[in-house]
Length: 234
Image (cartoon, rainbow, N blue to C red; front, top):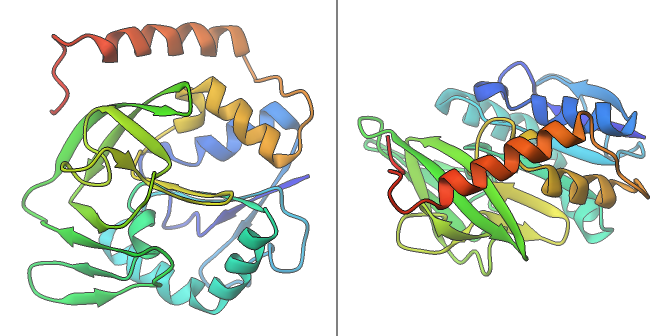
């Protein structure tokens, strides 16, 4: 079993790669990496999870150019039920374009959305949502929001912004292709969701690294984030 990390040299803000590391430690999966100048493993190898994390604004364009030849292979992977997780502003790379103050930047067009970037107005917040009946907690730190038809999204917002502050659905889901604006160690913060990812990877009876401690911390954070007296933006 293998987990592929795409472009870790530029897609590793906020410690996002801890998601792949945690899932690897919890399953015994081997981690393979693909740099910007390399061909991805997933078109020809059996990859249980393809992962891409948060990058810089310049990194978004580098990743777009590197990944464009493999977009068709990702669509085929998704059609066959393969699991892909995209976090942070890497989500915007798969929209139609990014509009910043000076130019419209074409992106890969997989999701029916576009991003609006405002470099002088970074948005930071906590997040509380639902994945089915499962509570999801996390953090956002971004220079823009996305607008478009994301259907039911990946998560349903309880507190915080969805894909943008005007909508409840957060992120995108197309089959087992998942994308969310949440940054950092999403899998560690949300052990039930980590187990769901492991199940989708083909692990029959997932057991997490330090599972008891992870669940204890998760339950504390859910209570804190559910407190209506706790501020959400910072």
